[in-house]
Length: 400
Ligand SMILES: *Cc1c(COP(=O)(O)O)cnc(C)c1O
Image 1: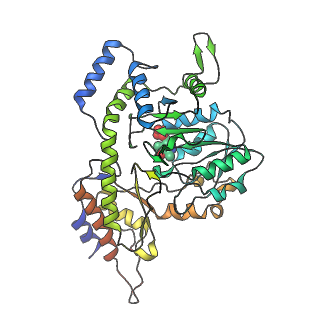
Image 2: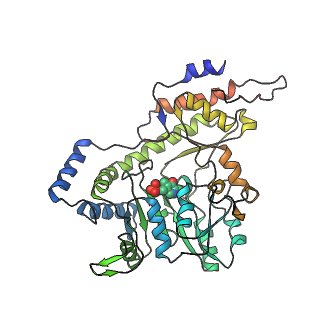
Image 3: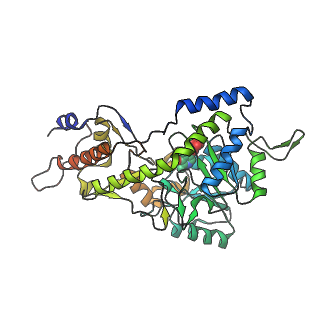
C-alpha cells in the first residue's frame, strides 16, 4: 500500500484533537451571566469566585487553596511566597515551558535534572549530585498527572534544607496513597487551562501548607494589597474573574464523569495497543487513583519500524492530531541551552523520551469507535512499512 492509499483508507472526516473541553449547558452559563449582570461584580473575590474556591477545596480535599487567573502566575507566586528569588532550583526539562519560565521570571537559575525512564518524572537518584550552595528548592512536575517519587524527594529536601514546589498542572483529582497528590510538598500549583482535564477557560490554583500562608498568597495575587492603605509585599495581578469562576462551577459538576470516561478510553487504548511491537505504554502508577488526563505512548523506531515523527505525520494526515508532549525539551530553548545542566549528555533519558513520545487523543466524549480506529491506524502503519530483503525496515520518508 502506498502512503496515499493508506491515508485514503484511514483518514477521518473531522479532525480529532488531542483533547477537547467538556462544554457545560449554555443555558446554565447564561443563568450565571444574568447573576453577574445583576450584581455588577465582575472580579476581585466575587461570590462565584468564593463559591468555586470552597467547592474545589472540598472536591480535592485540600483546605488552603487559592484560585488564580492561570497556573503560570500561581507558579510565580509560589516561588515569591517562599522567598525564593535568587540562586538555583532543580527541575525537570521534560515539561511545558511555563515550569522553567516561572524560575526565570523570579531570577532563579534552573538546574535541569534527568528523568526516570519508568515514571518520566524527576529521577530522585539524580537530584543530590546537583545540589550546591546556591540551591534553594526542587520544582518537580507530576507529568501527565502521574505521581513523582514524593517520599524520596521529601527526604532529600529535608536533608538539605530545600523547599519543594510541585507543578501539579496535570494532577487535578489524582490521589496517591489515599491522599490528594496536591497535598505533597511545601506547595502545589494546578492549571485550569482549557486544554486541561478541569478548566475555568484560563485559570489555576495554588495549594498552600497553612492558613497563614494562604492569606499571604491571597495578598500577593492582588498586588500585595492587604487593605486600602497597606501593601505587604511585591504582589502581582493573579486574580480569577467571575466569568471564569462560573465556568468552573459548571465544569466541576462534570469532572467525575470526565475522569471516569477518560479511564474507559485509556483502557480501550491499553487493549488496542498491547500487542504492537515497539509501542510502549506507561505502567499504571501503583497506589494511585489516576485522572487519565493524557495517554502517552513511546515509539521505539527500531522495533516498530516507523519513527515517532513519521507516525505523527501519518496520524496528522489521517486527521488524528496527536501531540509530541514534551518535545523539544525546554532545556533546548535558546534562553536555557547554554546552561551547563542543559547539556544533552546530562539528560540522556529525557532526550530519548522526548524523541519517542506521542500523546494520543483523550477526552470524555471521544467515541470508542474512534479510539479503536486510532489503534488500528497505529497497528497498520507499522505493517504497511516497506522492508529490505533481509527484513530491516526502510524508514518512510515523511512525505505525507
Ligand atoms: C498547562 C501547564 C502549565 C501552565 O498553566 P497555565 O494555566 O496555562 O498558565 C504549567 N505547567 C505545566 C506542566 C502545564 O502543562
